[in-house]
Image 1 (cartoon, rainbow, N blue to C red):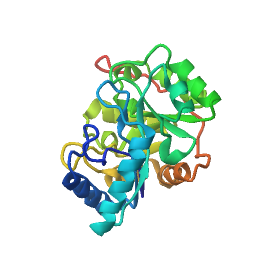
Image 2: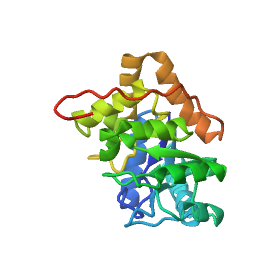
Image 3: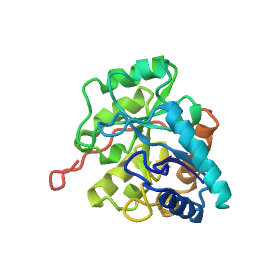
Image 4: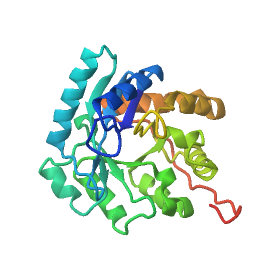
Length: 254
């Protein structure tokens, strides 16, 4: 399997802090059946800035470490970019790093809201020749309350990535429920770990994919598996027609 979202580079953000942490994460990833992982440290999120050149340098060092430790895990370079008004300029000056230098670019919203300019920025990213991938929309408070906003973003060309831990309930039942609603409505295109460590924010991709296979069948299971490979190959990913999430009035949620 390929994991397109992780914080496995040591000492650059709130993920792995030491090389020992990175080694432990790499071994955990391999145990999950992951053979390729994209390192996506935070950028422009208010606490961390990790530009393209810095990330490439760290990935090279990490790859050499895993070879020395005989860990069969390929590390690719990426970036988790908090949405901001300078993204197009940073794409032009090559500060931003699309995933594995493909056309796919991670875009993160603040956890509690969706900026008013988000729709325009997602459009501008596409005009610039890239495909925005909205990360963990299932954990965004505003999207949980107003899922039609995500439907509009996807309908207009954005992709999304749901966290494996969300699918199996590690962020709580409400987020798990919304994750499954996004899968059912064809509003997500990738499942990835967003792993930060091996304890509180670890790898559970295998369990999440088995859950998807059991609940939605082989078509969805293989679509998500293949999409991660297609992304790495810089090919067009599989997409199904999106639908609006049906809001259910239950304790004021959705």
